[in-house]
Amino acid sequence: MPIITNYDQLMNPDKVFVAFDVETTGLSPSYDRIVELGGVKFQDGKVLEIFNELVDPEIPMPPEVSKINGITPGMLVGKPKIAEILPQFLKFIDGAVLVAHNAEFDVSFVNWAMKRMGLGLLTNDVVDTLRMSQAALPGRKNYKLQEIAPDVGVVALDAHRACDDSRVCMEVFHVCLDKLNPGRQAFFF
Image (cartoon, rainbow, N blue to C red; front, side, top):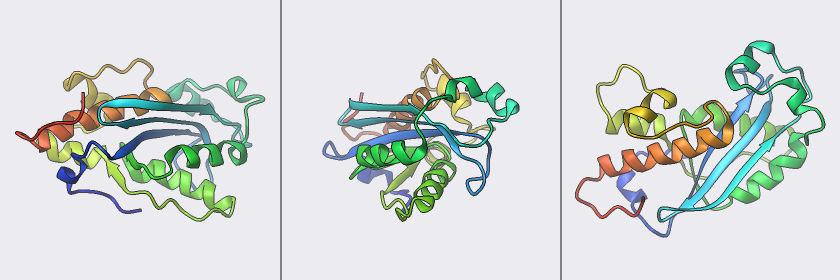
């Protein structure tokens, strides 16, 4: 998974990006599972498509995790399993530069799901907005997405849910990209 750190190469109206986020049953991609997968595909400042699916993790949803993301076991009953959702998501991100906050976490869960299905690993280029925000907004004590967002004028509507976190990530990406490329024509919002 190549992580992009040369941010001026992203100032290209032809590049397609997908900001994405996973919600999971815990923190270990080898043991825990995805319960929600969300993404926002965008190009040249325009949202092209949205992906948002709850996923039956096939393991119990811990109550302490439900308290964080608001996803209850009852919400997952009857939802498709990752084997059905992942191929749709891979088609959704095909050819796009992936954008995620603390990207290693989200990418690792997708990669583990792919490995379990015999699909290899992600090959997309990746932008980590955690690293990007550290470069664009130096000196902060906290670089959590939900802490950065309001400070740069981005409003979270449904924090710790995959689709809204993806949208927030996309907007933080745009703010950081503009800060890292002053004086260049921005192709975004």
